[in-house]
Length: 446
Ligand SMILES: NC(=O)c1ccc[n+]([C@@H]2O[C@H](COP(=O)([O-])OP(=O)(O)OC[C@H]3O[C@@H](n4cnc5c(N)ncnc54)[C@H](O)[C@@H]3O)[C@@H](O)[C@H]2O)c1
Image 1 (cartoon, rainbow, N blue to C red):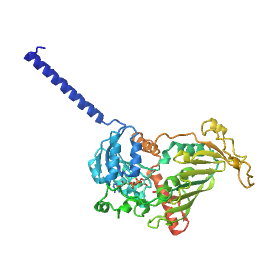
Image 2 (cartoon, rainbow, N blue to C red):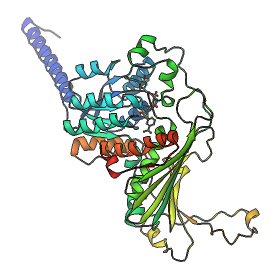
Image 3 (cartoon, rainbow, N blue to C red):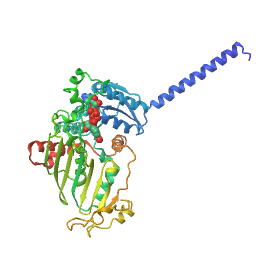
Image 4 (cartoon, rainbow, N blue to C red):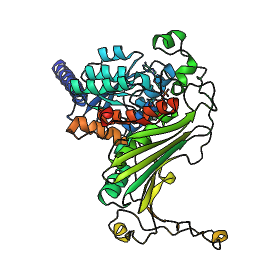
């Protein structure tokens, strides 16, 4: 092709114009994708350990969240959190210190706090004061004074504070408690709630060889040793022991089921096996509840030397029991008592509120066993119909982010988390004093 100078100049100009236009479009597209849509939220996390990762894994499934920063004092946690987020398209700034993060990250909307319990108040309060909404893991704090300060800071700043009792947003629990127990009164009067979280023997957690944490860092952030940093749950400075760590999730449900806070608790427990730890390694406790239906009791057990019965909850009433657990194979049914006064459950199954009765499994060897006259006939089992197809923490995180976006009420605001903290932290006092602890309703007001 012949091209004179004029043609050449024209085509060069045209190519230049095209290039410029393309560049402008690319910038425009990049800008557009950087423009926050009304539903987009900029998020950071403080504390990226085991639970931090669980929360991040649930968060990356929620549309509209943009992780901007992560903060942790340990390289190991930072590496895995950053890698998880990168895999899902989030490029984050990484910080050791939360104050530096809050200083430099000026366009955040919300922060997730998943540090050990003793740091929750300091981290949550600082974020709230920066004008950010906070999702803070349970236990709200290992000190009631600090837990109270979180409720007050949320009130003062007008920002949202959600506490991580995630069963409160789980559709399976909402169906069991709100629909079946409350509305339909499937169990009649609920006289008892029981729950346990039992674990087999465990060794102390160590630190991977390639991810040391320096003595200066431990000292700067208040940890007495690597042993205490990794096994913080067992030490009074940082946590509340198994009754607080595990029990808080399930004891929280007792209040939801009975509709009132407990009036007292008695407890027995001890450091009977892991003698180098500071917190009780087994605790058995009984709460009393008084509501308009009368007196009810909630029994809780946490063992760390036997995993027998694992973790599950049972809400037991005159007409039946609901057995439930965060993992359905451990509990997902309603058991109907065979007393003549118990109404038929078929109509509930027809409405889809429960599934059709399971066929009882009778082992050949037990068929001919005489049933003692004192024994009740075995209850019939009716499976619960609701499935949760998301990670267990996702609905609670969605509840938090929807509260920011649309003003939906929080399922576990600071005030509710505080009530649970009052009930749960009292157990350690009851064990130590060997005395019944009586609560006044005002004890539950933050
Ligand atoms: N909701 C649930 O089901 C559930 C389950 C497990 C744990 N939790 C809660 O989550 C929280 C974290 O527990 P975990 O099991 O992940 O503990 P973990 O020890 O695995 O992780 C804690 C992380 O916090 C970091 N950290 C400690 N102090 C810090 C500080 N001052 N600043 C920044 N980072 C700091 C640690 O380096 C670590 O990475 C606890 O409050 C725990 O009770 C909740």
